[in-house]
Structure formats: structure tokens, C-alpha cells
Length: 215
Length: 215
DNA sequence: GTCAATAGTCTTGTATACAAGATAAAGATT
DNA sequence: AATCTTTATCTTGTATACAAGACTATTGAC
Image 1 (spheres, chains in turn red, orange, blue, green):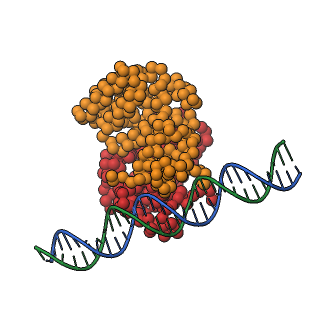
Image 2 (cartoon, rainbow over the protein chains, first blue to last red; image 1 turned 120 degrees about the horizontal axis):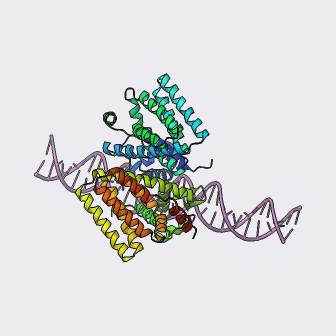
Image 3 (tube, rainbow over the protein chains, first blue to last red; image 1 turned 180 degrees about the vertical axis):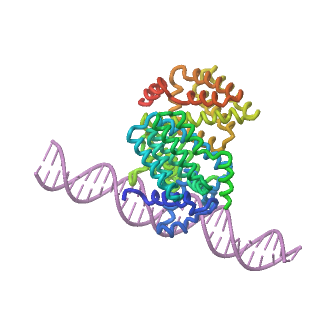
């Protein structure tokens, strides 16, 4: 394997954070993690430091690392920025997508449809992620794609909460349909607007999110 | 001091990168850095790992860390994203700025004016940074402010190149003036548009940048 | 019974040691 | 003479050791 231990550990721990296995505010014990992964503290520390740099962990000097626990206000701000970036990706995708990009987008959309039909929220959650990635890829901007993917990952725990809200899955899918049409039609500004509102958590959706946060 | 060694080292090395003391593509020797800062390799490694996480360094397994040397295409993409975020910050600043924010913006603008009058590019470069930060702050979105600041730092070496181009400083200042007016007038969409084009490197400005990159 | 102070333990932060892969150099073979 | 192979050195990656600050629990005083 070409990867290093600390890189695998970083991905592993990051995954545990964004999937909620490590709850926000929870402290990460270095020796505990070290024994769990069967390594020494050194690579654990290196993984933790990287996650700190990304903004997933906060390191309080001499007091250890804790999972960032953003205030609702901050979560809202993160969704705002995400919405803007997604809108940008959508606009670029509309202008630049190739036939292959379009096919990939349609395929991802169909997979979402199957999940909706089966009523499987978890599957939809997964396919939804691939749908959005298809748009990032179609933007043909490597940097934007990376930024969007990183933000998407980071907001994963909260998006998961959102989908639990009654009927959100169907509403989300309906929005996807219009997005696909706009992108394929090459309408940059419509794609931007649709994706912005699709991603942003405004009005009721924000209160729903906050309500679900506390439990 | 409350800060840790590795945090200070991270800031120090990061600064050396964005100011160009470490050239793109250059390899960072751990023991060399360790002796330079009078510490062991451990905190150096931890600093390097963090800079890797934020995308300033690339770590090739068992072969050390090198300063990221982005292709022109990628630099262009970074400016595109930066432009979008700045536009967003401008739009929010226009809607949300308080009287204090407005005063700070005007003050920063005046400092820029003095630098232009004195013909001091380096001073302008510095005051320009403060001008943009005043806009971020006026957006009243802590997360957006952080993202913009981080991007601004990361693009610092290339923005410095831009200002060397003949007359760019005066042109930049002229754009600032219109931006100040739009923000203070509360015109969100005009502020967005002006900041977008102010930050983006399009047309001639892109070729100028590329031309300066090679030397 | 409650609060405060002190001792003890635990955890982090840094240094050092060791192992393994990578680079470079020297020798051998064609 | 050039190239391939082998060996030696150097650098990274991980483990361990040690020091200092933070937390905890116990004991003493009010």
C-alpha cells in the first residue's frame, strides 16, 4: 500500500466524525485511539493535527482535541457558503458539461429516483451525494470540485438530519429533476439559482434542522 | 504564551511559503527546519502535516514534503472561487453592514488612497488586504470571513505578482472606490458584481499573471 | 456538611531512538 | 564506455521515553 499510516488514520477518524460516531464536543483521547488502531500515539497525533487544520477538531493547548461543535448560527453560515459554491458549480456545469458529464448526471439522478421509489432514506442519502458530485465534476474546475466535496463532507452530519424531516426526500428529488433539466439545457443562471435554494437551509428548513440538532 | 510550539511553527512556515521564501516545488527538509528553529523533528512534522491538510504542501510518501506548485489552470480556478466568495461577502456586507463597519471600510479605503498617492506598491498591497478584510467583517458571517481570509492568504503570492503589472494599483484603487459606494448604498447585487470582477483574473490580467509566474 | 488546598495521577507536548524505504555512489558486467 | 546491480548513506515514518501542565481525589479546616 502506498498510503501512510497517518493518512489512513486521518480518513478513518474523519469518517468517524462526519458520520457522528464521535459526537460534537467529544474529546479524543490519544492513547485510546492508539490502542484501538494498534499503533503508537505519534501517527494518531499527526492525524489529529491534520483534522484540526481542516477545521473538524479544535485543539485546546495541553487539554486535548475535541470535535468541533458549531453553534446553529455557524452551521447556517456554512450552508450559506455551500449553497453559493454549489450554485457556482451548477452554473459552470451548465456551460461546460460534455455529453459524458450529462449521461453521468442523468444516471445519478435515476439512482436517486430508485431510492425514492423504494422509500430508502439511507440509500437516497448516499445516491444524493453522488448526484452532487456529478455536478461538481461537470463544472470542469478541479479546485471548485475539491472545495465543494470538502464542504459536502463537512456538512454531512447535518444533511443527514435534514433528510429525516418528513417528505424532505421527495422534495429534494423534485428539485434534482429541475436542476438536471437546467444543467442539460445549458441554462447557467437557472442552474445556479436552483442549486442555491436546493442547498441553502432557509426558513422552515432551518428551524427543522435546529430542532433535530438537540436530540 | 498560550500557543504551542507546533502552532507557531505552522504559522512561521506558512508565512515563509506564502511570502515566497520557500519557492513552489521546493522540498522541505525536516532536520534542516528543526535545527533552524532549535527544536526536534516532532513539532516540525506536526506543522508540516497541518500545512499539508490545508493544501499548501504535498506529502509524497517516504519522499518528504514539497511546496505545492499549482498549474496556471489551477491558479485561475482558485481565483474564480475566490471571486465568487468575495462577491458573496460584498453582497452580505451591503445588506448587513453597521455604521461601524462602514466607517472601518472608509478608513481602510483612505489608507489605500494614501499608498496610491505615495506610489508605494508594497504599502498598497498591505492596505489592500485590510480593505478586503473590512468587507469580510461587514458580511457578519464568521464562517465566510474565515473562508475568505484563508483563500486570500493562499493566493497572496500571486496577488503580489499582479500588482507589479503597470497601472494595476491605480486600477485596483478605482475599483475599490466603486465597491465602497455600492456597499454603503446597500446595493447587494452591484457590490457582488463589482467584487467579482475586481478579484477575478480574466482576459489580459490572466495572461499578465502567467507571464509573471515564470520568472 | 461544604469548600478549599494539596498531593497524586493522568494526558499532552517534545525529544530521542530505531526501522524501513529512497537516493546516491561505486563496482561489475556486457 | 555505458548500464545495471549492489551497497552504503540519508531521510522519512513510527515507537518509546521523559517532562510539564491539567484534572481528580482525598484530606483538612471552617
